[in-house]
Length: 180
Image 1 (spheres, rainbow, N blue to C red):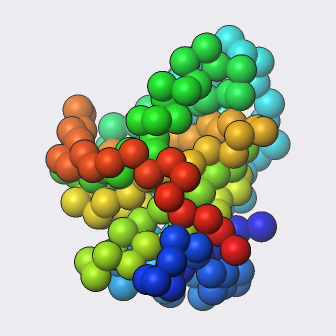
Image 2 (image 1 turned 180 degrees about the horizontal axis):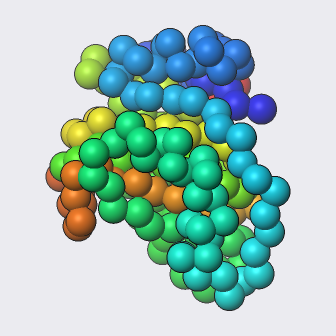
């Protein structure tokens, strides 16, 4: 189930504030973040599946999303629990950062928690599941904690860029926030 958490400012424990997808979308609009849940076809891949095969398997829901975006660079990020560089990749994902362009993602397998920093330093955490689409605007600081048991696979869409850059890199956020 998709869940949204918010910090209490005095502690690093984030409290559950919503589980209704429409309410989650409405709450995230204030951050310039777009959220929706899309229906995905039932597809499974072996460990050798390439980016083109993965993207091609989800072309129908992607076409729907891409129809709203002028120019997009697509890629696939796939990290399984057995990945040989998992620790390094986890550290990179959990380092707060922002991009110079909008970054959208469709989670197609597994799960995780997308953390977003608001302008007033409030932290929101979106617990994501397969089918969740999230568009983070340029310069919005965020980080991602993957599900340790399942890992994750996501199709990322970078707007108006062929080579998106990280425009802000902060500190490693591993272990700083807890979800209640």
